[in-house]
Length: 159
Image: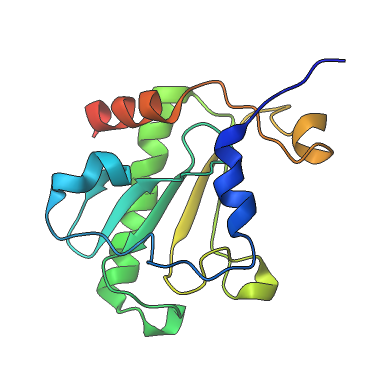
Protein backbone atom coordinates (compact mmCIF):
# COMPACT_ATOMS: atom_id res chain seq x y z
CA UNK A 1 0.00 0.00 0.00
CA UNK A 2 1.27 3.46 -0.88
CA UNK A 3 0.92 6.46 1.40
CA UNK A 4 0.43 10.02 0.27
CA UNK A 5 1.57 12.51 2.91
CA UNK A 6 0.21 16.05 3.02
CA UNK A 7 1.41 17.47 6.35
CA UNK A 8 0.67 21.03 5.20
CA UNK A 9 -3.05 20.16 5.48
CA UNK A 10 -2.81 19.64 9.25
CA UNK A 11 -3.11 23.36 10.05
CA UNK A 12 -6.35 23.48 8.06
CA UNK A 13 -7.78 20.27 9.52
CA UNK A 14 -6.89 21.32 13.07
CA UNK A 15 -8.51 24.73 12.58
CA UNK A 16 -11.92 23.44 11.45
CA UNK A 17 -14.57 24.63 13.88
CA UNK A 18 -12.30 27.15 15.57
CA UNK A 19 -12.34 30.92 15.28
CA UNK A 20 -9.18 32.26 13.66
CA UNK A 21 -7.04 34.49 15.90
CA UNK A 22 -6.67 37.01 13.10
CA UNK A 23 -8.51 37.52 9.86
CA UNK A 24 -6.49 36.01 6.99
CA UNK A 25 -7.98 38.59 4.61
CA UNK A 26 -7.08 41.69 6.61
CA UNK A 27 -3.84 42.64 4.91
CA UNK A 28 -1.42 45.35 5.92
CA UNK A 29 -1.62 48.52 3.79
CA UNK A 30 2.09 48.11 3.05
CA UNK A 31 2.99 45.52 0.42
CA UNK A 32 6.06 44.41 2.41
CA UNK A 33 4.28 41.27 3.67
CA UNK A 34 2.73 40.39 0.31
CA UNK A 35 5.01 37.39 -0.41
CA UNK A 36 4.37 35.88 3.03
CA UNK A 37 0.61 36.55 2.74
CA UNK A 38 0.55 35.35 -0.91
CA UNK A 39 -0.94 38.62 -2.19
CA UNK A 40 -0.35 38.60 -5.95
CA UNK A 41 -2.08 41.86 -6.92
CA UNK A 42 -3.40 44.99 -5.21
CA UNK A 43 -6.08 47.26 -6.64
CA UNK A 44 -7.91 50.24 -5.14
CA UNK A 45 -10.66 48.45 -3.15
CA UNK A 46 -9.68 44.76 -3.39
CA UNK A 47 -6.69 42.48 -3.70
CA UNK A 48 -5.97 39.05 -5.18
CA UNK A 49 -4.41 36.41 -2.97
CA UNK A 50 -3.54 32.74 -3.51
CA UNK A 51 -5.60 30.31 -1.46
CA UNK A 52 -3.36 28.80 1.22
CA UNK A 53 -5.41 25.57 0.99
CA UNK A 54 -6.18 25.43 -2.76
CA UNK A 55 -8.64 23.10 -4.46
CA UNK A 56 -6.51 23.23 -7.59
CA UNK A 57 -3.26 24.90 -8.66
CA UNK A 58 -3.88 28.61 -9.18
CA UNK A 59 -6.91 28.86 -6.84
CA UNK A 60 -7.34 32.62 -6.36
CA UNK A 61 -9.28 34.60 -3.78
CA UNK A 62 -10.39 38.19 -4.29
CA UNK A 63 -11.24 40.17 -1.17
CA UNK A 64 -11.93 43.78 -0.25
CA UNK A 65 -9.51 45.57 2.04
CA UNK A 66 -12.50 46.48 4.21
CA UNK A 67 -13.32 43.85 6.83
CA UNK A 68 -16.94 43.17 5.85
CA UNK A 69 -18.83 39.90 6.08
CA UNK A 70 -22.02 40.57 4.15
CA UNK A 71 -22.36 41.07 0.43
CA UNK A 72 -24.92 43.82 1.01
CA UNK A 73 -22.36 45.77 3.08
CA UNK A 74 -20.02 46.09 0.09
CA UNK A 75 -20.07 49.32 -1.91
CA UNK A 76 -20.82 49.35 -5.63
CA UNK A 77 -17.17 50.35 -6.23
CA UNK A 78 -15.90 47.36 -4.25
CA UNK A 79 -18.17 44.94 -6.11
CA UNK A 80 -17.43 46.39 -9.54
CA UNK A 81 -13.70 46.20 -8.98
CA UNK A 82 -14.04 42.67 -7.57
CA UNK A 83 -15.60 41.51 -10.83
CA UNK A 84 -12.90 43.32 -12.82
CA UNK A 85 -10.31 41.41 -10.79
CA UNK A 86 -12.17 38.15 -11.47
CA UNK A 87 -11.81 38.88 -15.19
CA UNK A 88 -8.14 39.74 -14.79
CA UNK A 89 -7.56 36.62 -12.69
CA UNK A 90 -9.21 34.42 -15.32
CA UNK A 91 -7.05 35.96 -18.04
CA UNK A 92 -3.91 35.36 -16.03
CA UNK A 93 -4.92 31.78 -15.19
CA UNK A 94 -5.57 31.08 -18.89
CA UNK A 95 -2.12 32.40 -19.77
CA UNK A 96 -0.32 30.49 -17.00
CA UNK A 97 -2.20 27.17 -16.78
CA UNK A 98 -4.62 26.82 -19.73
CA UNK A 99 -7.56 25.57 -17.62
CA UNK A 100 -10.57 24.07 -19.37
CA UNK A 101 -13.08 25.86 -17.13
CA UNK A 102 -13.59 27.81 -13.92
CA UNK A 103 -15.63 27.77 -10.74
CA UNK A 104 -16.31 31.31 -9.56
CA UNK A 105 -18.31 32.18 -6.49
CA UNK A 106 -18.77 33.00 -2.84
CA UNK A 107 -19.82 30.91 0.12
CA UNK A 108 -21.81 33.26 2.33
CA UNK A 109 -22.50 31.93 5.81
CA UNK A 110 -21.60 28.76 7.70
CA UNK A 111 -24.37 26.61 6.19
CA UNK A 112 -23.22 27.64 2.70
CA UNK A 113 -19.74 26.30 3.36
CA UNK A 114 -17.89 29.52 4.14
CA UNK A 115 -14.61 28.68 5.87
CA UNK A 116 -13.89 32.33 6.66
CA UNK A 117 -17.29 33.90 7.28
CA UNK A 118 -16.03 37.17 8.75
CA UNK A 119 -14.49 38.62 5.57
CA UNK A 120 -16.18 38.62 2.18
CA UNK A 121 -14.16 36.94 -0.57
CA UNK A 122 -14.65 35.51 -4.06
CA UNK A 123 -13.13 32.23 -5.24
CA UNK A 124 -11.72 31.81 -8.75
CA UNK A 125 -10.86 28.14 -9.22
CA UNK A 126 -9.34 26.87 -12.46
CA UNK A 127 -10.66 23.45 -13.51
CA UNK A 128 -9.54 20.66 -15.83
CA UNK A 129 -11.27 17.47 -16.94
CA UNK A 130 -10.50 14.81 -14.34
CA UNK A 131 -9.09 17.16 -11.69
CA UNK A 132 -11.52 15.83 -9.05
CA UNK A 133 -10.32 12.28 -8.62
CA UNK A 134 -10.81 9.56 -6.04
CA UNK A 135 -8.06 10.97 -3.81
CA UNK A 136 -9.92 14.28 -3.45
CA UNK A 137 -13.40 12.83 -3.31
CA UNK A 138 -12.85 9.79 -1.07
CA UNK A 139 -9.51 10.46 0.57
CA UNK A 140 -10.19 14.13 1.36
CA UNK A 141 -6.68 14.94 0.18
CA UNK A 142 -5.76 17.21 -2.70
CA UNK A 143 -2.88 16.37 -4.99
CA UNK A 144 -1.42 19.56 -6.42
CA UNK A 145 1.08 19.54 -9.25
CA UNK A 146 2.93 22.67 -8.16
CA UNK A 147 4.27 24.08 -4.89
CA UNK A 148 2.49 27.20 -3.64
CA UNK A 149 5.75 29.20 -3.73
CA UNK A 150 6.15 28.40 -7.44
CA UNK A 151 2.53 29.37 -8.13
CA UNK A 152 3.07 32.66 -6.27
CA UNK A 153 6.21 33.46 -8.26
CA UNK A 154 4.41 32.77 -11.56
CA UNK A 155 1.51 35.09 -10.64
CA UNK A 156 3.83 37.89 -9.51
CA UNK A 157 5.61 37.73 -12.86
CA UNK A 158 2.29 37.62 -14.75
CA UNK A 159 0.69 40.55 -12.92
